Image 1 (cartoon, rainbow, N blue to C red):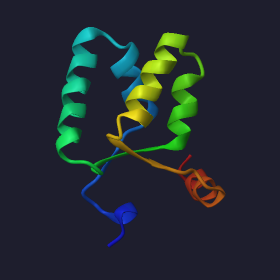
Image 2: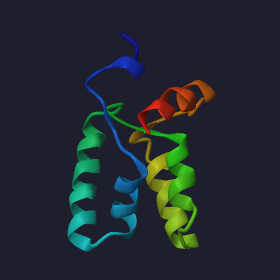
Image 3: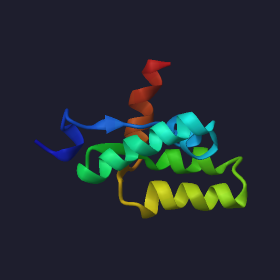
Length: 94
């Protein structure tokens, strides 16, 4: 089975990262603890490349650096591309 179809993965949308970086301390600390678990299970957590655009849009320069460090540089999250086919397929969910 390919990694993209592995049912033992968790997808995180942009809201999770926004709460981790910009949220109240108790929420961000809980999410950081979750991210620590992902260090022990690489490849378990997934997000899309679209997440990067969503979190950077209104972030301060410091927050932008935090987002890049967390989502891209940490290697905790597999980044999945958003293709035209994916966008067309997901349009039916709205």
